[in-house]
Image (cartoon, rainbow, N blue to C red):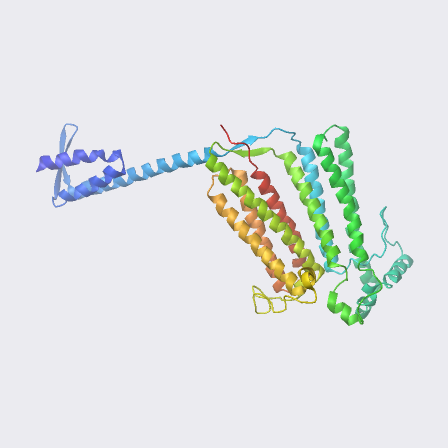
Length: 455
């Protein structure tokens, strides 16, 4: 009997061969569990120990061996998956100073969008009734301020709204400086673009396709000023098509600029911002994701495609926000997730407007904005799930997390802006938030760019 137990104990040394043998040893230990003492022979000596200690020792050894085996397998698997995706440098010019200059210009555009939102929300956009492309000096004394104020009184913004609020000269000065600051920021952007451009061009840093692309960006920035004035002029029309001031205020709440022109102005700013940012990122970072696995590259390509599509939806959502602002649609249906107690509002379609419902009917405009936002959230969830199945490099993981954070913050701001009745602070942050989300997606797309399949 003791010899049998001794042989069993020696055979249990095979536990180190793997979890399968460990399991057999544990089950085999039950065969001699009835014995109160066990004889162990080894290394030329014999010992008699309690069998419970032998069983406990065997169990602990097997658990430790199993853990070591799993850890080795997991580390080996992780190492292989990380090595599947590498970062390779693409051929082409890398110029970080030029890239940072363009990103800096994009940040000025971001500031202008923020200031433009505040100008709109405070009803300041129609305070300056003249436009001088070469520059504008604000009134410098009381007489000049009074003359400017008298000019302002000739237009619907005062006649249909401000005069019923006992609007004073000091209040006029505030809205005037808001609009003046917005216009001066546009001119500052022109200088911030033109001067470094000339410097880099003289130093030979602007080459090839980049020269033409920067020329297009400069022209787009200049055109933005024209689009802005075109928008303002829509609110300076003296032939107002309403019978009473009350009807005018009911339709606008603020200055009566065309929602189409307002959205055009905002869309041009978005295009300029993303183009500056994308060009800057492209000059600063030339890394590409590369892999020797066709399956992994297919997954990366799918992730990049979803990122492009969702970024496009985010852009359309931002543009639809221009129609929400232009129609003051955020001031209606201040409940969520329903609209007036229904998912689809009852008056979503006005038969007299036809297709113009999409751009002018308040319930339709707000409903469309909500649905586009939900689609953006869905796209973000899908790309996040796809990214989790890949061992992405750290910078790509950070880009995915940045997108998730930006979208989550923007959705929260949007809902709060609606529920609290569009306060100026939240509404302005929500407008800027749309560009923050586009920033995150632009960086993600750059981080996921692919190299050819490795051989």
